[in-house]
Amino acid sequence: MLRSLTLSLATMALSAMPITAAFAAGTVPTVQQALFDAKHIVGLTPGTELVYKFERKPSDEAVLGKAFTDTINVKIENDAKNSKKDVLIQIYTGDRARDPQKITEMDGNPMLIVYLDNAVAHFRELAGGDRAYLKNTFSKHLGTQAKVEPVTISFKGADVPGYKVVAIPYANDPARAKMRGYEGAVFTLYVSDKIPGHFAKMTSNFVNAVKDGPRLDEITTLDGVGEIK
Image (cartoon, rainbow, N blue to C red; front, top):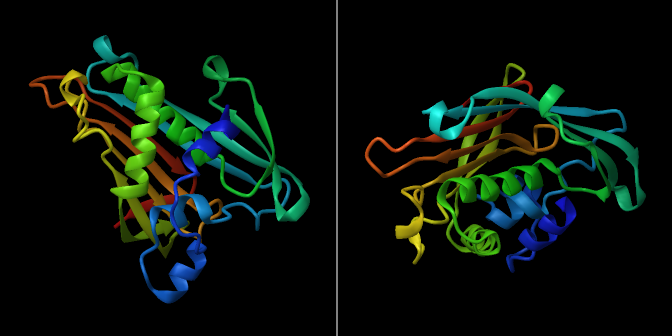
């Protein structure tokens, strides 16, 4: 499932300059360059673990379910051919733990796949709609309308340059009137090639335009990441 989602989202027809080249030139990368072209994990050695803190924060637990905090772990298991890696993903712990998923020959960080899959799935739980339609709309928005801006990210006490990618994929959707007030949901990814795995923080803010409608915020943060400005 993870690999198929990678392929479907990464087929957007944008240019293919590596994000490191964009940093060197001092120019802002495209979404394609920042998220999909960069080889996020090729420099990581076997045994490296990327630990992400996941926070689920509903405004009304009675309507949206319980708040919780857990972890998502991405472990580099082995070197593979062409500088790629075999990785093991463990989503959540304890009673919430999902079965570990092993993916072979990756050079991108699979956390991107996890995040995008959850973004679409959780939007659908709140707003309704067809999953394939919602995924396709999200993909097209990333390719044509998402915004990229420079940011400074604090990582283990040092400031490093990075970028944020902001997507509001359903705000102008023809079917937005049927989305139960969640059409303004905002999805933000903070990336830097100075940080292991590149992805520093990813947020999904399911805001509700209906008066007193419940809101859900989901935040995924790499261990060691602090203030972003």
